[in-house]
Length: 615
Image (cartoon, rainbow, N blue to C red):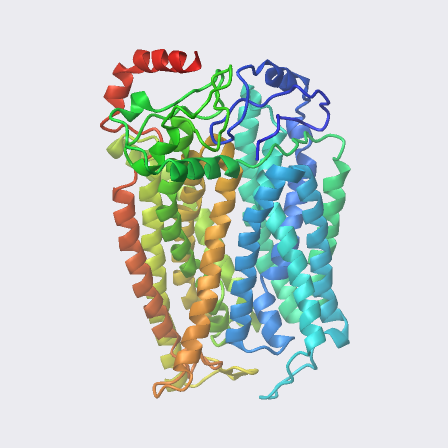
């Protein structure tokens, strides 16, 4: 579909235009009305940040407070088996992450960011409320199991109500993740110096509040849920989500609200369709000269030079006698004739896919480190000091967040300046090198996890235990603090790969597809969550009746969880090798290649050919 002109809700003129984008496949030579539109907008910047950051803080604490201890909640309150609960959590996380892609499409195409966020924050509140009711209303959860070895499972109605709450959280979190950051950036003028600085500061505050919310949720909220009351512990996220809704809507009249402008996916479809329809044409001898490449004035995206990869797509930009042009030089039928710029932008997206796939496999390690260390902690010594205080099992995941946060500071303040003197790069290392370093630390994290679990189980079987964990098994006398190394390594991996990935997608995608660039980051995490669910189910089913025992038995002292970790280590190592191969052949957007010199020497010839085509 054609992308609509740039609009905000306060602008009523029909002639306002967004600068032309090749991927959009639409636009106009004249963009004066776009500049006028920018002047009409009132960018309040930091004046509206209390509403946006306040909403962000309470919303994140609310969502994470509900979800961070959900694994324990499903096993202790809903009496589900560990592998079943882990499978549900991974499938749920994957669905949320896949939902971000759909939300980004609906946001850009139909609703705009403000309307999408309005629905999403309400859905999060209702989802958190539904989860709270499953704990507060006796009829909505199974009979408490206590110390019994055999427990009554949840009924169909109880599962249905639980799934309703999770579905609302999918709608809410799936809508918030791809839109919240961009909506906050919308409040700053991107053309002023103060606006640019404000956007950078807002990004810092955004990630700070995200980490802050995780730490609060994984410590205070989880402690109340595990040691005081599930009802009280789940009431806190509901109250915070209600406050988030109130704060967000309080700034309704102050926000800059950019309307939906249509989906850029149509431009990708046009290139593919045109290339297929012209697949019988012979390649041109000098594509950087002979391909149709009308680029209007004030072009929105970075103008790309020809690259010789994926040359089958070049046929979409070959002009035939049947192709007609409008008076302004644009193709009369964009589904049959595309510009070289459009083709190059699609090539940029195709180049990213192999890297994205490797990153999706990488997140398998993070998905596992967010689940099974909780079960390991349950059967380890969680006592802190001599006062009898026990750290909640789900709280140990906070060490992953802490490792990530601390290493980001070390990386930015120590490693980057040191590496800059060696490599000459402002970022110290390239984005792909940063992602690769994170994948290496993920491999190391899983390897260490296997050795730690082997030690925990050996101590539990050889030495006196500390009692019985209900419905699981004996508690090993090994301190749960031994889990910190594997979690910190996973946090370092995230500091490298997660942030490197976001920046990589942001820079390598066409400028008008950056909302989708953010969403595929979450889609990759979603793929890994589904893969984790598949692996857990497959390993459990395959080893359940094996002579060596079930690798993922309910009692980890009878399981072989270390084997599972070592298997994942091997898988992650293969993925790292695959990533290194793909990274070696990757060509960055706008990078030099062997035809650039030819392009630069033939610019006049290209302009003359465009003028001739227009006539």
